[in-house]
Image (cartoon, protein in one colour):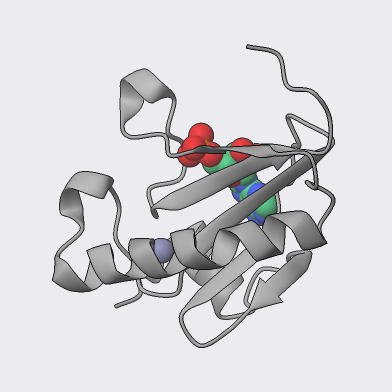
Length: 112
Ligand code: AMP
Ligand code: ZN
């Protein structure tokens, strides 16, 4: 359920501080520490799984839950004109934290 060496599990349990913008029993949304856009948030499930390809039925329920919540969270945090969602999967995508997360980017017109 959690991985004691995982940075995002530590953020979820409060061991590592973060700028949270939304939290409920299943998910957490916080500001990316190195923002790549005016608004750059990360949505994580409180349950640890590394990759999209590792998501079991419960993992998929969490992803579905997060995708349903993200529109209102994005708008409430400065993405009224739209936003981009990204999941980096694996090394070629540059994934650095192996706890599945959804990047929410916006607050400006994004390049590409
Ligand atoms: P990824 O490359 O998809 O694995 O993205 C990991 C993201 O996590 C990067 O954009 C990092 O800037 C961000 N990140 C890493 N550590 C932290 C942290 N402690 N608090 C907030 N964001 C973080
Ligand atoms: Zn984790």
